[in-house]
Image (tube, rainbow, N blue to C red):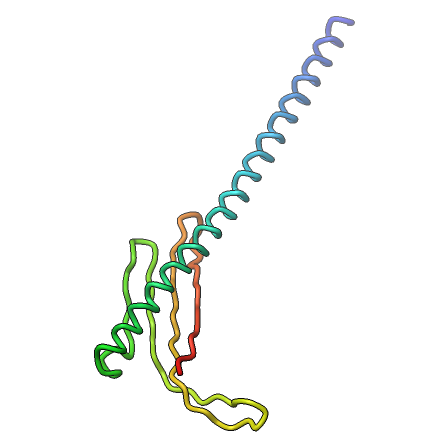
Length: 131
């Protein structure tokens, strides 16, 4: 009978060791997934800032060289995962303590990206008020 008891305890120890290894492996995979998400967001943030600056320069150059109607709206595919567009429009803002209306030209820039880790699209938007 003592022989069966030893086999039972060996099986129990093997089960506990297997469970511990499985839980540590799952924890490691979860940690790596979180790090991938953080890395992806940092990459998206930096790349979007660069693409927004590029699109801002393109929009202003087009606006200076050609009529405003020709360059009112445009878009560009930077690479297979990043897409950007801009639009010029007029806006009225309140200025100073007098709250006088002032007409300004506004440039809106939007950068879109489809992530490789999920189906959720990422979006970066920036607004410039031009005098």
